[in-house]
Length: 251
Image 1: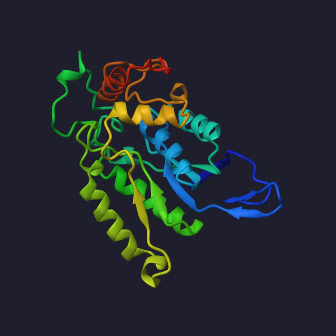
Image 2: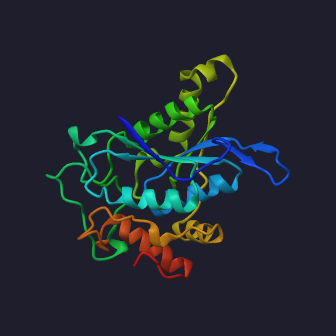
């Protein structure tokens, strides 16, 4: 089931903007995966700066940190997404991840240097494949040929579905699996503008685009809705802000 709320009113219809001379210009549409975290909020701003009307898509998938959805709503509204939809799915039915299975604890560390290079237990099996599939379905309905997501192959926790080769494979599959792709009327492009950026570079890019990081939430294991400061995501975020030379407004 999808439930949704408009993030802004549009007097002349989605993806249309009335000009001062009374004419109407039409902007292309893009679906943006929006978790409410630092990376996805930056990507939302990038999609808009690229000239797209952004349709933000978030998920309540059984994650223990679903406070991120409140952050996603706030970001979508503040940044002027045309629509923000929240898809309800239950990856907790399968478990297998510290983010969706209460029997598996979220790892905590004394320092960022203690993170290892393996695939951590916070990896949610097939999550990005499922999220991108939903985004693909919505894009096809919208007549959009562009999907944005905030994965990085530089500063990330070792997730296999954050790699460039994975995104290329999904894009190839998507263009084989849709009516528009088969008919040759529309070729899907998956945009991952952070793929080669460090967390610090992402933060600098976001500040330049006016992203309010005070609205975002990254923690995997919040305590009373506050970041724990010691999970993988908190440590990577802290390192990013330190390397960017700015304070984290969410703290």
